[in-house]
Length: 397
Image 1: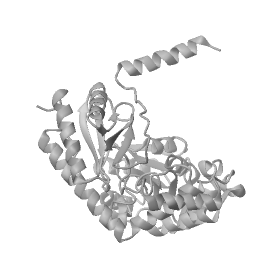
Image 2 (image 1 turned 90 degrees about the vertical axis):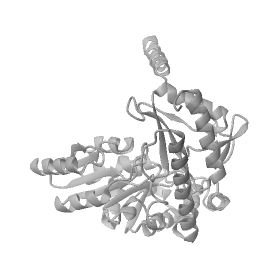
Image 3 (image 1 turned 120 degrees about the vertical axis):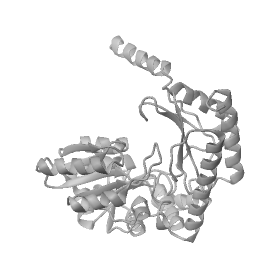
Image 4 (image 1 turned 90 degrees about the horizontal axis):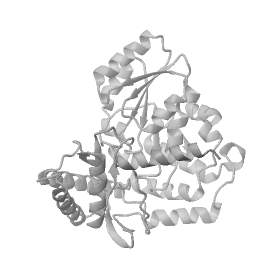
């Protein structure tokens, strides 16, 4: 045992806490939904990725139970050995058909999907041009790949074109532009029409992480590319947000790309297959999202977002602009964000303060998120609680 190592760890934790950057884990004692039980009492939940309100839906829950009853707890193996079940193929077909792609490969997590997409497909003679605000999983996936790396300022098309020109000048054979479809910390929706035009001009591929878009953005909730009315080459996504709220990720692409990924993507080859319960719940969530009920849920979701944005702005809070149901309340200071989240919990609202390294220093916030399961009354209650806490802490007058 090396005492100096453990002393260093303790000192680092103390420094994190002193800066107000400690991220507490609050234990939830209920099913996910607009109201959850925390600390022995019911509180309004306004920070989940439960966009369509399906995470606690009884139909989704029971579909997972039925799948586990039929297929067991899991495969005890990776897919290529003895871990591919009929329900895995059913889920791959369902998500590919829903999103309009030839085929799909499943992963244990969306982080693995982004971590596994680049290295098998691109080499040292290729180039990846990544948005500067992309999710950490994309950043890590790019790091694992030997392709040349370029970055462009978020949604800055002039900078993207400059990087495309540079990649071509540097002799890149294949170029892929990688972007979040909707940026998780800000709620910005990528300018995929403009990205598509530049990709066509410079003969580049497009990869979109639609974890915060699948199920509720665009026609039938098919995602940010459908919202923008364009086609892309690769879409990564998750079943852990709008599509049931469990876990698991996927890559949708052409069938030959999926075939190659199944031979070489390390997170796929070396991780157990997705559990049957997750598959069953996800299949039911896709069925709901793709149908008329999904349209009703999406309409309610965006009505909730509009009501909340209007009321919070009128109360004097600074919000990130947009129309996505991710609505960050900007506070700047990390300790202030943590203090405000704690006060809101006392007032019966469960939200989380976000600070470095999740967001840049000086841009701490409380990221609120709307759900189709929220009522207008609950939204008004949350705005009232924010107003009380905001006045007490000097955020608003």
